[in-house]
Image 1 (tube, rainbow, N blue to C red):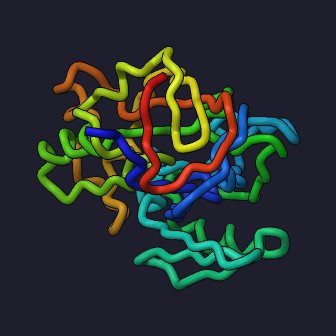
Image 2: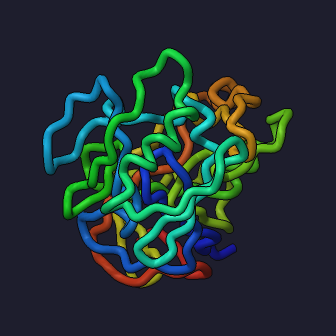
Length: 246
């Protein structure tokens, strides 16, 4: 069976919301366009300006699970954010930083450092978790293998991946590590497997932890889900495009 792109996601603000898209133009050496363009720093952050900073400097779903229930939609230069416990919010990231901080503050878990500022990503990459500019890719079959062992609804959004592929067997994408794959018009090196954190235990409709995801992964002999790609040749990527190792 031919493997194909099933879905594409970007996350304009790190840990806050997700947005499905039909196509992207991948750029060699860069993260997915529009992905993690901003992050919300907290009061304990130690940031260096204009460069990639580690995820511990920002609010995260791993420590504040309610963030996992945020949805986001881009509308021109504005962002529309929703959450079951908060009023809808329309913001311009250039002018509405304080409104965003006030809106997201109640979603940060008690005892965690409070959000303080919206931080832009460097010009050439998004604020992904890895120091290298990577894009995450996962198999829907691997997701289903985990979902089959979950006692609650287990949505693909828990993984916060960029690319979902249909047509592979469960965990087959792990066999692509250190290989180059073709995705639509682009090519990428599969750099490593991505280990997972507590963010995946939270229901993306409610923001409540309801599935022991890491324990389920342990049953497969690891705590990994998805692989990290480094784009080596840019090009258009669309839902339905073929994915194959070279």
